[in-house]
Amino acid sequence: MKRSSVQSEIHQSRPFRSKKQEATIALLRTASVVGRALGRVLEPWSLSLAQYNALRIIRGAGSDGIATLAIRERMIEEGTTITRILDKLEEAGYISRERSDPDRRQVVCVATTAGARLLDKIDPAVDAADEEAVAALSAREVGQLIDLLDAVRAANAHRGAPRTMTRATTAPE
Image (cartoon, rainbow, N blue to C red; front, side, top):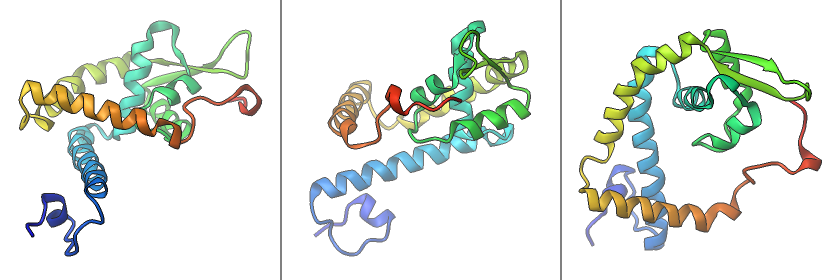
C-alpha cells in the first residue's frame, strides 16, 4: 500500500489506525509547518507568532484598548500564557498596560506608536506568507478548506477548555 505524504514526513512505517487518525495527524502536522513558516517571517523583528497575534489584537482595539482576558479569548492558539506575552511586548515598548476605572482588577492594553509602526512594517510580510501558505490551492479549494476547518473546530469546541471563564472562577488580573 502506498504511504501517504504525512506518513512519509513523520517516518511512520505502519499504517495509521484509521483515515480519521491520518487526517488528524495531517491537520496537526500542517498547522505546525505553516506556524513555523510564519514564525520565520517574524524572526527579524524578534517576535513570536503569539506576540504578533496579541499585538495585532491590541492594535485592532484602537485607542480605548482591550482587556487582558479579551485578548486571551481572541488569540489564535488557545491556552497561550497571555501575561508573559504582554510582559514581553510591554518591555519592548510595543504596548502599555493600565488598570481600568472603576474596576481596578481589569488591565487594559493599548498599542503604542512604536507597536503600531512595527506592525505596519511586518504586516506586508505576514500577508505574503499567508498567501504563500495556501498558494497550492485554487480559490475554490481555499473556500472548501475554510469550510472544512470550520466544521472540525465546531465539532471539537466542546472538547477543549472553555473560551471564557465563568464569573465564579474568574480571577482578578
